Image 1 (cartoon, rainbow, N blue to C red):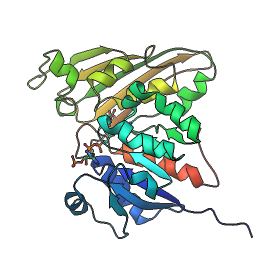
Image 2: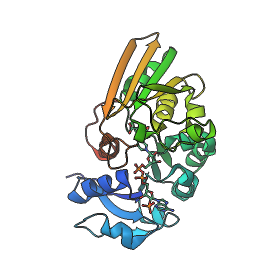
Image 3: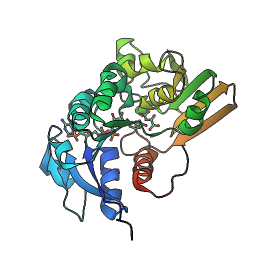
Image 4: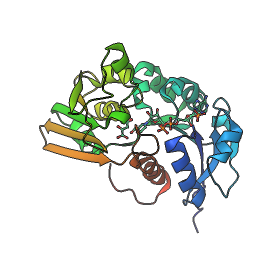
Length: 271
Ligand SMILES: NC(=O)C1=CN([C@@H]2O[C@H](COP(=O)(O)OP(=O)(O)OC[C@H]3O[C@@H](n4cnc5c(N)ncnc54)[C@H](OP(=O)(O)O)[C@@H]3O)[C@@H](O)[C@H]2O)C=CC1
Ligand SMILES: O=C([O-])CC(=O)C(=O)O
């Protein structure tokens, strides 16, 4: 009989909207995956925010990697390096949700290569990165994404503050940004990680085109993508139901679970 695959120890960095959902699903039991540790900054508050039957270690982000084989980064973007460097230096896997923060820290890819670690950017709150990466094996002519979010999913973004754009009282949809994912990663660090993930799968953060609308008439975070390539043209749209964090869709944590399952599954579906 062959040796059974060992269980991969998963660590969660940041117990917010995504982290709590991930912790709950992992704690309920997924074959091949064990919730080993959670990095938080206020342990008492974190323990009170989630009900777990298992006993993961509660620790800080500097020590997290030492308890795990995989670290899922679901913390504010500004903490990306603090989480990624110890994980990748130890040759482990980093699942990066604050994908916008990767653009200004691309040396992390070299660090992963040097230590045989790996950075996984999951599809997260988006869709279709399988088709976009397949098309990128040929020639993609253009990728355009239009994001439409309720006002509360955008309030407080740096771009709005820096440009004195007031969306609080709008009664009609308002186009608030037209540019690239690279620009959005700076101006909307907590709102448009999906655009950066799309760009990394396709034609990069400077050639991908992005429009962002604040829309008082929608309740979901809606992303529409149009791709024109030499292999296919396709368009797709996702309408995300927000979590308790209005910026974050419910499907985000589920996308991470699906990606983690593929690491040990005897059959993988999708690229
Ligand atoms: N790629 C994608 O598709 C998506 C990416 N995202 C991104 O994923 C990340 C997580 O999203 P979400 O869960 O909604 O965010 P939340 O704001 O709900 O959660 C972030 C958590 O990080 C914690 N945190 C802050 N500082 C530290 C620290 N020093 N050590 C440990 N924990 C800390 C916060 O704790 P405290 O409660 O103490 O403040 C909070 O619980 C964000 O960057 C978001 O932009 C989100 C959705 C989709
Ligand atoms: O891009 C993000 O970080 C989150 C997002 O739009 C969504 O959840 O729909």
